[in-house]
Length: 150
Image (cartoon, rainbow, N blue to C red; front, side):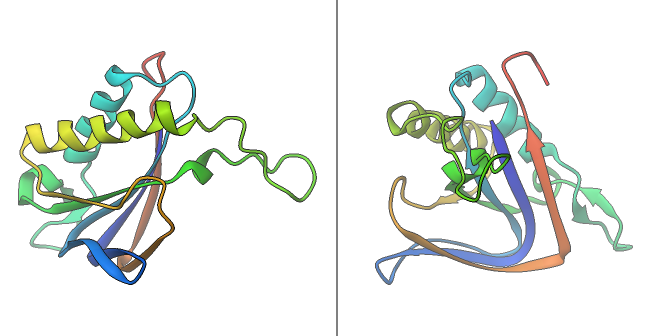
């Protein structure tokens, strides 16, 4: 499972012009799922996101997590995180899990974040979404967790 994490002052996602999710200061997280991912991988990703120390403390250093500050998290499914551009000019999507596998695992990340205490907004799985955000810092990180524990 991959997650592109952006520290934001605000973020929102719309579908067909209608807002479906919005957060204030916190993390905007694009989540991609591959074939070997499982509910355990989703739970470990959620825990990593909740405790990732990329938010500013009183001195402006990245020493705080969403858990520390009660920061909100916007989770948006993003199969293109598994796009392979090694050959040619058109990405291959074969490493991305099919919707029937990916949707419940993105949902598992969201549910585990909520279980941990996070306020979570989401996009709409499979929809043509528009994500608007103000990247704070800017801070952008790629996380990857696999079935082997990485």
